[in-house]
Length: 499
Image 1 (cartoon, rainbow, N blue to C red):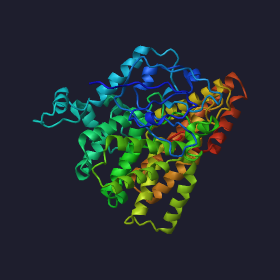
Image 2 (cartoon, one colour):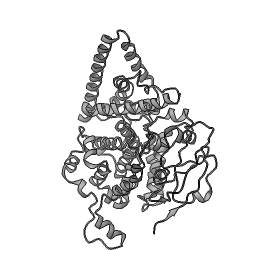
Image 3 (tube, helix red, strand yellow):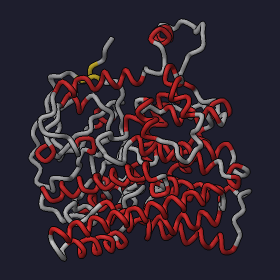
Image 4 (cartoon, rainbow, N blue to C red):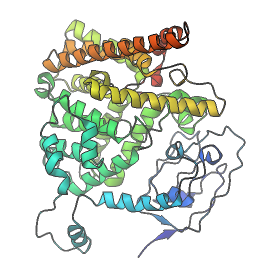
């Protein structure tokens, strides 16, 4: 029997009634319909989302919905808020194009359900639903685990791993993370329910915004693959426990969950409710962390563990994800240097192992400049385009354009050179001191070559511009690189742009 919830039409100024909050399903309302287009109400009501009914409430709920169908007759009154139009922007509608066809909106739930069940045969799923015992093994990976994808997974520890090709071969699912968890034997060791685990990974995949050029599920998979490479380094491989490895992989795949495609300063200056909720401190990272906690509790992935262990897992995940805040880069880097200078890192201590996991995740998050040129260039163009899209929104609505977000005064090369000089090189130099291996030297080598390549391209561009308009482009090229170095926090491209 299909259950339909008749949701009330609520002005956003009023608190959400208790009987609405007591339900498992909830709606993520958008107060920006006049700004970014008015999406089909059915599309809003049929997806998982987050709501905060009071921006001053520090215990605002992260409420998710799954397979809740709402009658199509339910409408939404046009809002008449007098507050800033960006307040309570719905992340998922941020890049919505005007004139989206209702046909594509109506097909979204079917695609989601299909992907949710793609890991098992229709026959197997129907037998499970009817309560018939399994006669043959459940093929979790189905066809995705064969052919080219399987060949690529055999080389997942290679630093030249092409995550873009892998994404195309696997249709963007959570196969990579599942494979790594199986490879380490963590599924059996922690007695993880296969169906719950795959449901968790699919929901993680869905909660990354595919409209984001950079902060999407492909970036999450790339960070996870890099994290795996670091976990295999001798110092870590010989010291980390199975719990540490499980924690590191889950943190890597979820570290940017539900990223809106804009940075923290944008949320603060537009009075977004998340900025108020987290008091303008690590806004995005806190949101990513709470989103992961919501998914873990909804899927019950660790529900079989003692409550204390589950809470410790959630807390430690938060510690890792919060470490990816680029605004705290100097804090972590200074602490790392002190440990290395004093040679007092003892990986037999749980606290020191956790700190190294934090540094490994930070490196994985911004490792794009350390990849081979063919991969690094794609990431550079993607993150720059995401910056420029934010700048376009700010221009359109007469807001101050954030540094690095103005496509008229910045270039991909300028931004990347600044990022490598002031952020990536200092971090990876210290990582090489800690783990002086072939991988560390390879990463530094790629970064040096990529930086030189961007510099060469900048010179060619400057010469070409001077031939057309003498004396104009040289100033722009020099100034943008300085801006890149002085930029703060989330305005830095390569990983953490929140991250």
